[in-house]
Each structure stands twice: as C-alpha cells, then as structure tokens.
Length: 156
Image 1 (cartoon, rainbow, N blue to C red):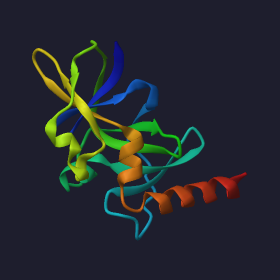
Image 2: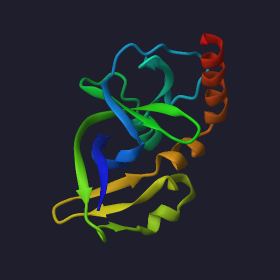
Image 3: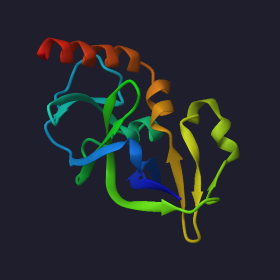
C-alpha cells in the first residue's frame, strides 16, 4: 500500500506521494516577483525556507486561483527544490491498495508527463502527480531554482 495526499485543483482530485509532501499551510504572505512565469505567484517563507509558490490551477487549466477563498499551500520537496503548490482543499491522506493505480493512455502525452497514473477506486478516480517530473517540466524552473539558491546563500 502506498499513501498519497489528496487535494483539489480546478474541479478535479489529484494526489501526491506523501513522502514528498512536507506540510500543508494556509496560503498567506506571498511576495510577488515581477517577470516570473504566469504560474509562479511569487515567493513565500515557510519554516525559514524561501520557496516559490506555484499555482497548480494555472499549470493544469490556465486559470489563476489566487483570487479564490480557502486556498492552501502544499509544500513539497524534490531532489532539487522545495516548492509550494496552491491547491483547493488538501483534504485527506489516502492509503492506495496495490493494483489501484493504473496507467492511462494520456499519460504519455508530452504536456502531461508529470501525471504518474490514475488511482482507480470504487467510487472515484484521482490523478496522481509526480512532483519531480512536474517541477522539471515547467518552463523557467531552472532560473527560479537558481534564484532561490542564491537567496539562501546570501541569507547565511
């Protein structure tokens, strides 16, 4: 059995592996940075760590969610970066039975290669996201990663 954190982005349910989720925070205090890609809302400090805030609705649906009420920041870590994903309702930790994750034909599509599979349960389907592939596939993330790293060095 694997564990995932389930949340909403847009109208759909998505999941991330629990081992890559650092925390779930209330969304507040974002420092906007000009000239960043449209999916980056800015930077925020979480536990003394400067992290970029990525709007998952913008990435998935080209719709900004920063005007909506009740948003959360799902802080994730990858090999190269910690980031915050803006999501609606991070609602549960789910144990996924073996065999419930299936590959979908659309997963091979180049623009959605960060979809890791579909969790197929009796009463719902949840798209599983690979945070490593998501972060690496977004245009401009290398520059953002470099900026965050430089800020971390200058603070020490």
